[in-house]
Length: 171
Image (cartoon, rainbow, N blue to C red; front, side, top):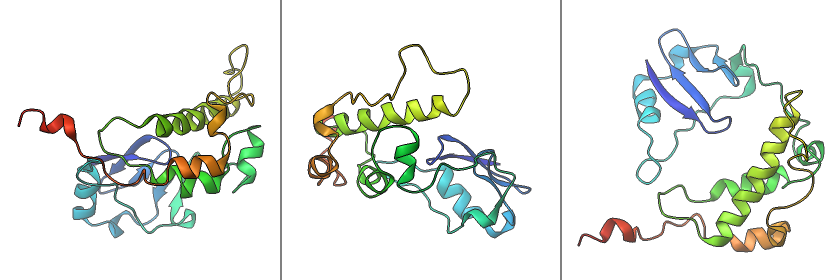
């Protein structure tokens, strides 16, 4: 058995002879379609050196998943009251670098905004979990980064790797 992280849901992704997948996404109908080398590569992913392994599978290739979807596409933002549109999340936030260097202040602000509203959305999907005062009620932690155009500009070069200066201190 090999394990990796499902970066969509943030849960353990399992590779074994009898199943490949996780409890939210579901399990591949044909687990034998995934070669051992792909399972090892996914299990070995370490963002500064080895990025995530992607599998060319669609929702129809999975079974027994507990995730029932959001309201779909850009309507997802409306269902949680506020937050970034799905297109901004996938096209801009999804390209933020995943190395171990500290995020720049502008990257941090966009990520905190996104995390805040995703937390509110997650709490909304579980009855009885919303704390008093609410989370994700339309109050942006960093309002200046609420505008997607400003966020795109702030993250324009974020996908590029930075020099890992702290790793070079000993030289």
